[in-house]
Image (tube, rainbow over all chains, first blue to last red; front, side, top):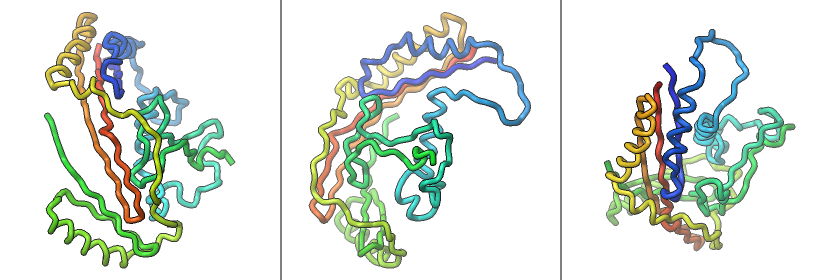
Length: 122
Length: 133
């Protein structure tokens, strides 16, 4: 059984393109038949929805100062170390026009582009 | 389904010791009780050595976060949108399910150093479709 998924998020409901969204989900469901594979390590290509979900969990679990201060972030004691592939850059930017902009965060900090230490690649 | 809620998050700072408490009871007596509980709680915390200070007054970028096109979306309108999506897929032999969500959150932040920030009703609209062939 093939399945497909598509999603749209915006501050402007009128920018929704119904046909485009439906086509996206249908095209994925129309790909070749899924095959069963054994558990193991595989080179994997994640679609943007999957990356978004992944980043959301990383944000909840570790990408904030309180979690680091309280010693429960996976980033504790990792500053300055390379913990991801050097081709990966992760940053927080509350003013990025491609995202859902918010001018400040709950700690009253003015939002601006802030790279995480994972970026350094050293 | 529609849900409306209000929450207050109070952060008390005593030197470098910090406590965070929350409530959804906005009665004055309840808020006073909350404060009286938070102060000794803060004093009992281990100091956060990285903490410098709460921020003082400042300006923030003027970001447009309000959309009248979202405020005008009724539950019926959203159902119609999902049906429209589903029909397009159904015509090509797919089974579908969909969901739509709209939300608005108004954030106000005030601190004892004079910072007062309000965010003018950020709104967000999302819609998703799953298809099965």
